Image 1: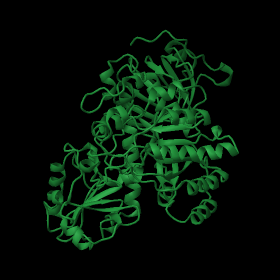
Image 2: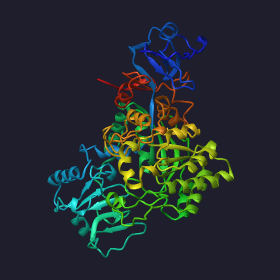
Image 3: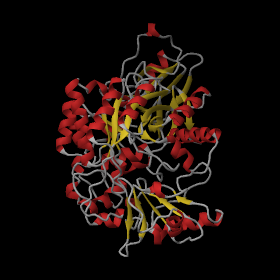
Image 4: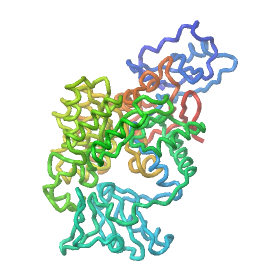
Length: 569
């Protein structure tokens, strides 16, 4: 394998450690991802940390002891352990714990799933179609009551995230009629005949019984989460950010850690229920003992989060511009001037953030629509006027519909971004029809972030499914890195290629960028002397393989603290 002609990292002085490394990986291409993006041939590990990187000859001469394990890489590439900054472990873990999910990529596939579940479900019991995002359906439209009426013996509900739909029996059981009043912030969507067409926008709570899931025991949840974390390791991930933990999630993760069942590292984001009166929210923040940085590198708290708007996939993200005519087909929108929903009004958001900041939290909010981004940055600016926030590493979560003004404000305040480049592949074909591609110039503007010095952490927002390439959302880090480099949609179209980044910068988003956002850059994110020995080995030459091959890279081995947590058979 050809190595770029870069200066290799010097060894630690011999006096600091005898020649007794636990492990040396040699004769490969070691991408350290240090400040100079140094490329080496070998790395030596002792007691879970990197003690040297350099040439194979030097490390085998100076670091090899009688008990040192040697791994000849035979030209393979070593990367720092990859870190998905945005996943949802428990929901993903339970989604396929009992049964494998079929690909739900069309209304026809959804109907087949309903028929399959109907044959196995007692008559009258609910059938829930797992979360599926309408922009990714071949038909590019939201399933209606008629679509779900392929089975009439069971109440059926389709989970589209912030918007659901239901069949005729489900509506009947729930008492939903043409006269049902819209809940606050929601809508019972009507067809041309004035009858409910099954689509419930921010109104799924009206379905009686649909929200009840199959009960899982605590041990089943622990087993499922452990399996999910091991699945992440098999994808090359050595750390993840769980971006919406509740008290239950925290309890389960702590039990896994206590039992030695955490194969990879987890940084937890506490998502609070901000729909309650602000005084209740403030009181809970003060009462909880949780704070940013509490824990250790295996399991710790990172961020405090509120959900500020809905989702672009269902037309509830709070936008600067209306969803327009295509929104009726894709989302079941009835108002062509609708711009989505803001869940937390500005003064309330500021008060919640003020209390969380005073309690020592790093801050973020789920924001997808442009107007929601603007509201979040307004709150950050109020805090910044009181005390500079740059060192707190507050960040925008998702931030799909950016603007130049938003970027300027982020740069000025030192605000970072938790980005999901994979969404360009899956969602741009439909979103372009909703808004027009000319209005999506700042949809994940990765190159602009980097040029302006805005820190970026890469994430997937994985929430459903165990397949790294087929899940909602695909958590394969190499797919997401590839998307950052090529910016091509699933239809094969280029999407603002001027916002492409090179593969080195893309790799940083899943290594040093994510580690920095989790306040872990001194411990992990790069392969440097003294840092934790988290790494992934891949067959191909990451820096020089054909661009198309980036998407299909797969781990040969994943290590955490120098211990193998995944090895390809």
